Length: 82
Image 1 (cartoon, rainbow, N blue to C red):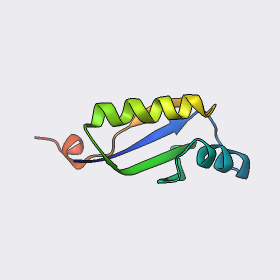
Image 2 (cartoon, rainbow, N blue to C red):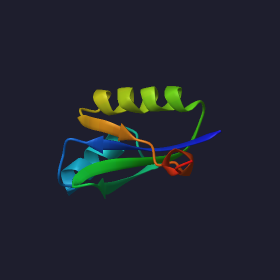
Image 3 (tube, rainbow, N blue to C red):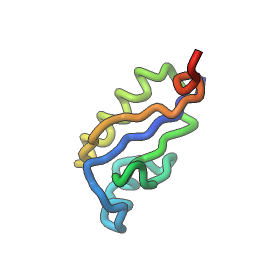
Image 4 (cartoon, rainbow, N blue to C red):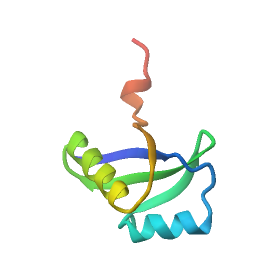
């Protein structure tokens, strides 16, 4: 199963220094973007159970000196009202 989620960062700007830090932390398979006035790493196409993939990404960010504000999961299933 492929996982898709955002690591929303404490940074408010997605500048070149942050882009370099994200790449150097090993997020070359992700995209640096903006999400609700914060820089965010959009992670897609990672195989595995969602909880495990999120934990690994958080550890990866921490090891790279990137401060995560929170994790957002943008999934249509969670957005639908019954």
